[in-house]
Image 1 (cartoon, rainbow, N blue to C red):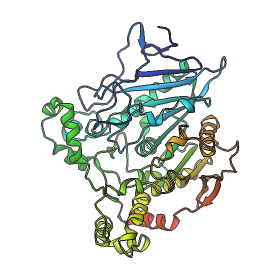
Image 2 (image 1 turned 180 degrees about the horizontal axis):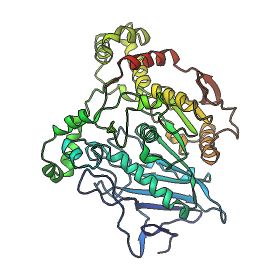
Image 3 (image 1 turned 90 degrees about the vertical axis):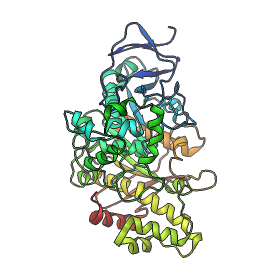
Image 4 (image 1 turned 180 degrees about the vertical axis):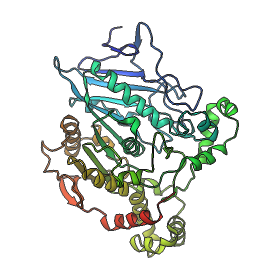
Length: 473
C-alpha cells in the first residue's frame, strides 16, 4: 500500500497523507458479539491492514454528520491523526471522547474532525464506544454472568480499552504515551470524570479537558438499572438474538422525553461497584479520585440547546416541572429561577437545565481537583454564535478549528499548550488563574478574552445544598 505504515500490537496498518498522516478504522477490541460483554482483545491479522476508511459508527438512530461505513454493532475502532514529528520527537497525545447523551455520536463525526488541531503539533485520537442499550444495559442475567457481579457499563469499558490501546501503540504514531490528555464534551466529559474515579483507568491518561461535563448528579445504582433492564425481557438468549434495529427502537423506552433534572438516569454509566466503584459525588467530595492537570468549563447558555424539546411553555407547566424535580425544595428552586409570566419561562428553564445538568458538575469537579492538583483551570465560553450567547456544544468548531477568528486561535492554542505541558497559559492569553480552594476563577473565551469569577455562584450554591440533602438515589 502506498500510504504510511505503522506496526501495532495486532498488526500493521496503512493510512494516508504526507505531512499529516491519518489512520482510520483501527480496531482496538474484538467485535462486541455476543452482546453485553466487556471488550476483548483483537485477533491479530497478517499483512498490512487498510486504515484509510472509518469503521462502522456505533448503533444509534440514523445520524446526520457521521462518516463511518454504516452503523453496526462491530464498531470498536479508533482513528489517529498525526503530524510527521522531527526525528526522535514524541508529540503530546489528545484522545477525544465524543458526546451525545450516551445514545448517539461517533469518532467519525465531521463536526469534530481533528485535522486542524493535529496540525498544531499533537497526535489526536478519536474513539468509538457502544451506545444506548448496546453500551449501557444492566440486567440481572448479565450481572450473574459477570465474574465481577456487575453489568451495564460496557460503553465505559470500551473507552478504557481504547485508552489501553493508546498506551501500547501510540509511540509508533509519533505520540508520547506519558503525555496523554483525554478530552471530551457532555457525555464524553462525564465519562472522563467517571474514569478518574475508576481503578480500571488508572495510569491510562495523565491530563484531562472536560467540556460541559454532565456530572455529579446521583448515579443510578446497579439494582435499579437491573430492574429497568429486566423490563426488556428475562431471556438473555432471546435479547441477544433481537435485530439490532429493534434494540435501537427500544432505546426510547429507557430515555424519557422529558429528562429529570435531579434523579438518576438508567441508560448511561451507573454505579456498578466494579467499573464505577461508588457514586461519583461522594467520591469527589471524599478525595477518592485521581487528581490530574485539568481544564473544565461550560458555555454561557448550556440549557438553551434542550428546552425547545420540552413541552413547557406556561408558568403553570414550569412550576409543575420544578415541583416534580425538587419536591419539598420547589419553593426555594423557584426563588432562584423565578418566572413572573410565560415570557420568562424559556430563559429560566434554560438556566435551570444548564445549571443542574452541566454547570453544577463542572464547578464541583474543578473545586475537588484543585484541592489536590494545582494545575486546575476553569473556563467559560461566551463567544456569540449566530448573534446569541453560545449553548451546549457550540464551542466545538472553535476547539477543532472549523470556525475562524481570534477566539478559535486562543482556544486551540490553549488546548495545545495544555496537552504539551499541563498549563494552557502563554501565547496571547491573558493570565489564566489556577483554581484554588474556595475560589472559582474562570477565563472567559470571547473577544476580548477576560477573567471572571463565581459565575452563577448563587444558583450553583442552591443546587449544592439540594444535592447534599436530597441527592441519594
